[in-house]
Image (cartoon, rainbow over all chains, first blue to last red; front, top):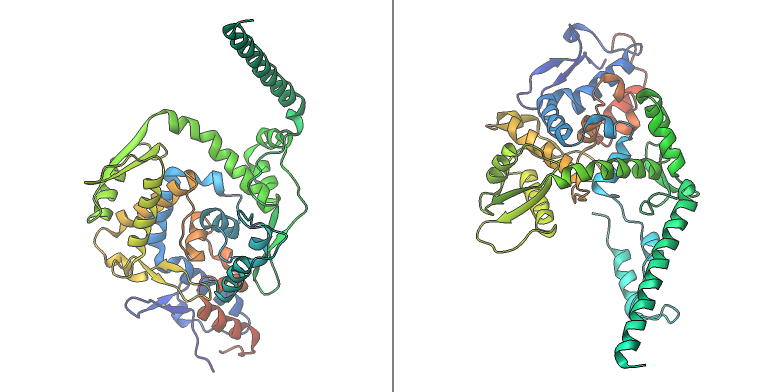
Length: 123
Length: 269
């Protein structure tokens, strides 16, 4: 028994919110759990902050109309706006142009630079 | 020949040379126009999702968007164009978006600039008011910080963007909050509607995001997936059927729901 119903908890006042009409009386079972998952995700990502997100959208579309970006994926929009979240060290290294160092002679300074970079994590 | 004569001769030759070069370049442009490769900026790549819902970036063999292809795409009706655009590789989509922004830029640039003055102490309130007064937000933004003598040729407005974004994301303001995700990200704080004037503030935040896209200012901030979803209009319940993607919104919720899906719970819960 999980005692799970079609509700979610409001993060501000801890009240139960129906995920669909009459959700407080509908038990989540094997047959309807995929629907529950979908509604729960939707609630968490959008419905719980609907008012705020709608305002962000409204402001954004004032400058960039929705039609300009709607063919993009979420990941792609994120890449366009914020760049890549993780830095690929080997890629960076391969595309680095050295000035003042001869690339055929291994320099201890350059070597140490990459060694130190490799010790950092992505955050 | 006198010195003057020699100098004049030299100048004539130089002019001729320049003329020839310009002409040569024009001819070259015309000859190659059909197959000019657009945009050398984005690396050919494809953002893909593996079976764990992890995003991976794959370098692809350079497919390129040619002018011919762009014209072809432009001539399509919106619906057909959308479906064709969706099928492009990531870097091609980004090139398309850049071209779109480029084509809109002249109209915004020639109509003058939005000049705003803000104080560093009262940055958020000042900027909010200034943005409210702007009619066309696509115009060039020129920022002056109060009591500072400097001319904004791009550097200061960038600084303005980073500073104000940082300020808006601060915990103490309460608009955003760290989300429960592996990779750090900011989500909208659910209780932020209690803040006075939150609607204006979020509206302003959206405008800043849009302006940053239009001016191609990279934002050094990690926003939650839910915000990008909203910007793309993915707001229906059916946009959230993929639980593997949901861990970028909230990892804990995703884990709990995954458990629910993988285990038999019976019909009566």
